[in-house]
Image 1 (cartoon, rainbow, N blue to C red):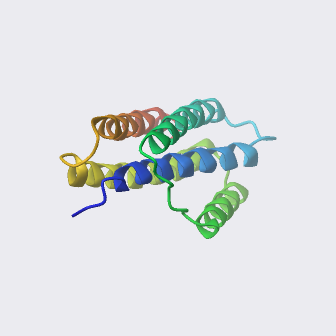
Image 2 (cartoon, helix red, strand yellow; image 1 turned 135 degrees about the vertical axis):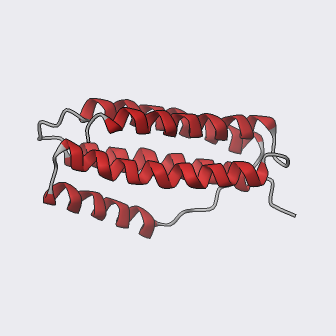
Length: 145
């Protein structure tokens, strides 16, 4: 039997990673004149909203999420900063964001399929909303390629 809270924990970790990655990217682009920053800021705010929503569901279900680890955050931060130093063009930033979104979509679709019959309807709704947001974000980011 699958852990009923696994999807909720996955959502929490995914939106936390998205929020943190976009914050890191915005910080790295702070003194630069990139047009993509406004779109990234909007997406970061959306991730923050999903983060708060997932926290509420974790508390409601009395779940303490597993830590994704400091190493994952560190590697993400280093990768983003290195990419910005190499080439901070809007198209390169869009490409980097698209890679993250694409991985997120693939994993979220798998998780939804695996857990849709076993989880609370509020958790499933949140997962589907995050997925829709990620798909919409891809379309927004494509403009910068």
